[in-house]
Length: 363
Image 1: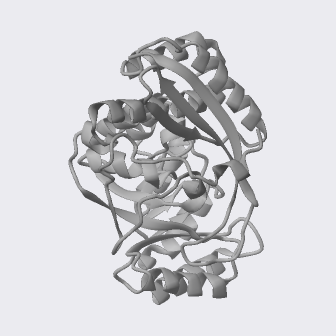
Image 2: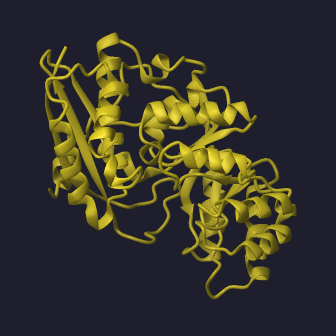
Image 3: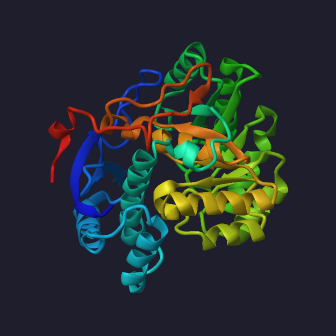
């Protein structure tokens, strides 16, 4: 089997909040780059990548240039092909556009392999579980008023979510005491049995993280996420050592090596792996295995329609972030039932691009 062609498109998807029917927040759109790889045998693999922002056209061009290098190659030799691409542009560095482009290509190659073998991605990776926990993300954002946060949290509980993530607003026109009160009121609304996470998005200093973390320890957050700069491994370790609440970190790390630094520094209790930034499916599994060796659980960042397969395949997979940003890419996506996602059983990723996707194409 040989690769016949590779095509990419830029699509601009609106950012909405369908999980709790919340109002618009933050930016209006996300720019994704879709990938289609066709083999001479007529098998098509699909993939997608983003984080390009204003450089989305550059990301598309990187996919096109790298993709041209593997036309005529065997798509089943995924590691060999992705290593070839990394070597070809190694001087660009281990992260950024290069890694995002390779990850989109890698995703489509795994889709081809699954379709060729007649196995889902989860099955190819081991098929450990048929269902995985998932949590609602993006419905309780810091830009919402307290009233909207509380109503949305209650709505998520009513819709069957047993796990959900909120955010804190510091720095801004709030005090640590107000932040703590907001967290306590959210806990009151959802009750004691809901796993409530909180994302800081790297907005705090180390001392702020320790201060607010201590003020909210009786909220019993399931985790505090990205409390300070993602590459401040010693700072994160100081916070982790000071708090009883687990810290989650890793979504902004590119490649495998920074995860070693995170684990060695004891900078996180829960390792969060982003499929696109880590460099593709094989790298994701490698980091999960590294974390398992240190008795650490792993969680995903975005793209739940892909991550459901990955979390299901590793024994230390904790929960899938159910974030709707990419849902309009696909004809259908896995839907939570009682706080869990069934692992798709269709060959490959189990996904096909939406029939309405053309309306969002911008390049």
